[in-house]
Image (cartoon, rainbow, N blue to C red; front, side, top):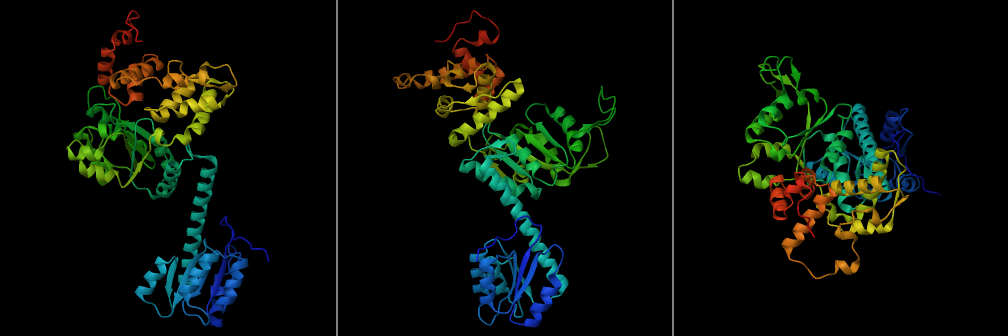
Length: 471
């Protein structure tokens, strides 16, 4: 007989009951019949149940531990081999804590002691059904992720990214605070958005705030809002970002840049779920899920007293660490195709395909700016090309990665020269934009300015076209 799969959509469930007392079996079968249960069958012998399970796997199995022809614990392992996705509820008239612990460790969904009421059994079965529905939904999504190579706007089929996808799906519904760590350009905001999308808060707002872009006073004003008359120019009451985002998710980007004095105020918000508007005296309740993101080493900052330890522990209930692009190069082809389509839509032109030589050139590049740098590189290629396919010639001509192989193998240059050459390449590629260059390189503008001064390029940044060209 052909083996039939159990239902996977949660619309109906097949339940098997195994007990050596026929009266008990009949009573439980009658009690569990309902419109959303496809089938309820009872068995007195374990051997008969196993034969049925082999051909028609159930969703839920309710089994006594002591049977005429089998030990309930051994039977559970045999059932799991035939129906690995089934939820198994064990019942016994001789309950013990040790046995309950052992059963749970071996995979039992629940351990029910006799005598139990029918309502108690129905509640346990209802919990098992909900557990299976949720699990199936997650499994379907993860299969889709593996097939499509994406979760929301996050692209990747590498083992590292599939692990990230799985973790996002596990923690998104839990409503706990999350700390997302990773280099600049690795997609920390996309992860925060995915956490929001797959959470129970997805009907609420997603708000992002850059903690390093404002002074302390401005941070307080943006996050908490202000009352009318709180300061000169405050002609009306302004709602803060946390108040507006209540019921949704807040991304605190670059949390490592937040001033220490402001960290104290944020900690109070996390502890009490209330805020005070600037100039206000009335506490305002908020309900936000916080996701913090950083490219800095917060553990080190805590040791150096540059970041509050208590705030750090509040934020990092769960930590997600994103790998740099150079550690998941197998994702570059899919990312390049995605960015090409995205750029084409932005420029209102037909999306070009991505040629093998284009991808090969990208695969050999270190990408210090990670996915963001790759996106800018592909966007530039799409903007400038008139062809239906992107080739290596559509990449920046001064980039070392598209040089001839013989050129790549030339004698090694001093490390300092290689560093300056690379900085110049990125600087030129951004159209001599210092802010964008510093972001891609992951350094401060002050550090970049010093490097440009060494190359006599500072004047070029100020618009002087007579500055000395490098090379």
